[in-house]
Image (cartoon, rainbow, N blue to C red; front, side, top):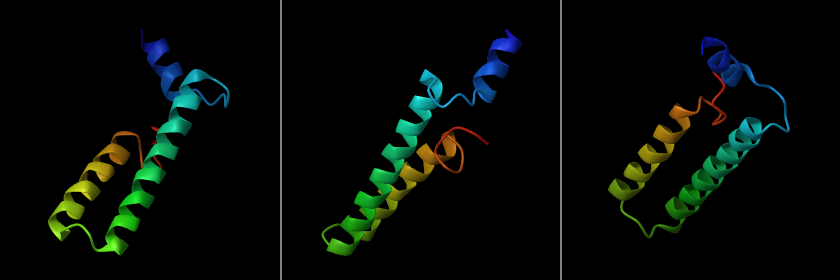
Length: 72
């Protein structure tokens, strides 16, 4: 069991399903952050709403590591 967990945490093959999911997660987080920046610039939403949305994005990023890939 420990070997399987270690393999999941250290898998660096770019075409593996795990690496692909990590890349997609990073792209999704980037898109969410960019959309939030656009929303801030538009002035449509309250600062409270924007802060909560930023918190959600930050929480998701923290789950997957600083860069959104799950690699720490």
